[in-house]
Amino acid sequence: MSKLLLVAAVLVAPILASNLQTRVVGYIPDYRTEILSSLDYSALTHVIAAFINPDAQGHFTPSWSLKSIVSHAKAKKVTVFVAIGGGGANIPVWKKQMSAQNAKATAQKLVASVLSIGAHGIDVDLEGDLVTGGSYNQFVATLASVAKAHNLGLSAALAKWTCSQAITDETLSHFDFINMMAYDYKGPWDTSPPLSDFSSYAVAKTELDYYTQTRNISGSKLTLGLPFYGYDFTNKKNVLAFTWAQLVQSNPGQIDNDHVGGKYYNGRKTIRAKTALAKSLGAGVMIWELGQDVHSGKNSLLQQIKIANTITIV
Image (cartoon, rainbow, N blue to C red; front, side, top):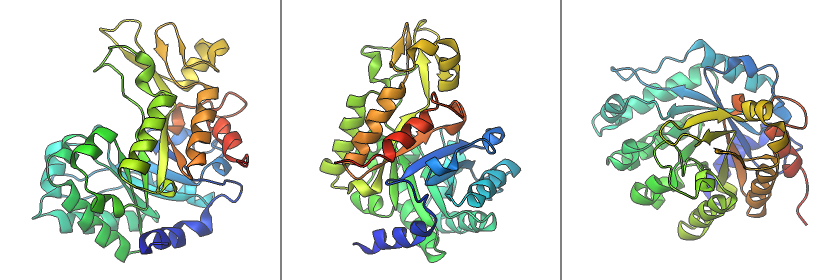
């Protein structure tokens, strides 16, 4: 076992849910605190509270909502990370704080903030130009050094297209695990067929092949991203997102399919199949995001993951 994996095991192993065989990571945005009391935490090994970002001076101030997510997850004995970045991150501010001049101070302020609320680690969800713009690799190295010095874990949410363009193998080695954003291959920005490639089983396999074969990363360091949402392409000039909970309510007879009319999503069968695929490679799964689910009963996608993940592969 490498030193990196050994550190990750020491950090995470004592508080993993004992009935799960592989990693299950669920993001909870800070606007979803209403779900905290209804979640089945036994189906999760990790919760990632999203997001915390710097102000113009590089300070990180955790919101009440973020603190609530962390405290609830910890009370349920689930490992909890805090995510930085996200699709709505302020790119000019981040570019300034990631620069060689500011990287160390930014990392120190971020780590201090995460420690102050008792989280176990940091998830780097810097996207798009923040990855391809030139400072990502250096910033991650700096952040990893500071985080590990304080026994914090470090993960990343990565899109394959930016990873393949800009992220080095050395940078990938800094992460305890990698959350593969294996979705959004289609959306309002691309309505060309096949629309099923929004987040198909084939896409999941392609991404897993890329990381395990092209980048030579162990499956144990990977979590396959699963969408708890979909897109309605009925009007391609106005593509709208919908949650799994909304799909169940509007089309209860289609929950084992992946599309109905112009709507594309991952149904129960595909969620189970992707979980099994990941597990066959020693990988886990990641969820964006838990607030989009039906929170109890047989229609819950989290429960479908739990079913697939607690069955031993022969």
